[in-house]
Image 1 (spheres, one colour):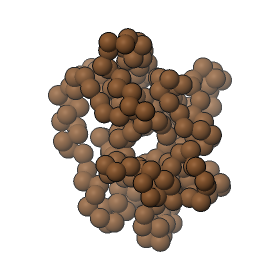
Image 2 (cartoon, rainbow, N blue to C red):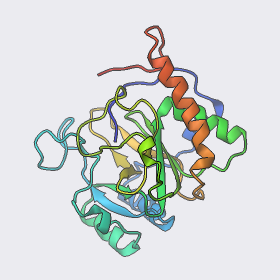
Image 3 (cartoon, rainbow, N blue to C red):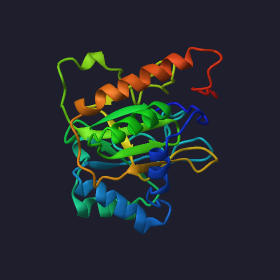
Image 4 (spheres, rainbow, N blue to C red):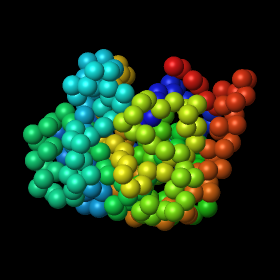
Length: 245
């Protein structure tokens, strides 16, 4: 999904802290994991099994030097395999108890994927302005995911940063701002575990019970926040973007 950016600095708003305090307990065991996956499927998010963390920073797949450990689908047929069928998801969850899951974008929903500092700022603004915000997930590797209705493949999609999810690890230098996951892309769906020694996760800040909004209603605040934080990253005296490589 993204490169690891280390810790976060900067002001965190009261609304965002409140949301984090109310996030679901996703480490409550397999029952809680399965319930969260089924809730995502009930909301219309098509799911498919994904890799999980291996030893250290490794991946459960057999690919030597996997560039996206624990962040990619298990099957090359993930686009056709992705489903909201409850029985199938229950079978996957029970037979693959360590697996993460991805949700295929561009079918029912898109995902606007931004650096977490920019996402915090934009979420504060959107909620304060009374904008309908849908599900929002936070990844401990430094990204925030805003789930929206899909626009399919817009004619101007080349305007947006590519995902390149299974090509090579992305860095903030390559993609400092927004990524629009639409047709042909995917993201990890909570609850998911990331490689590392600190029990890193992908978790819901706002769960899938929230209705999916039009992506255009979120776009301006997200791009504005990304631009401000990207500009801060270019300042050698700025602490907005800690880059621990």
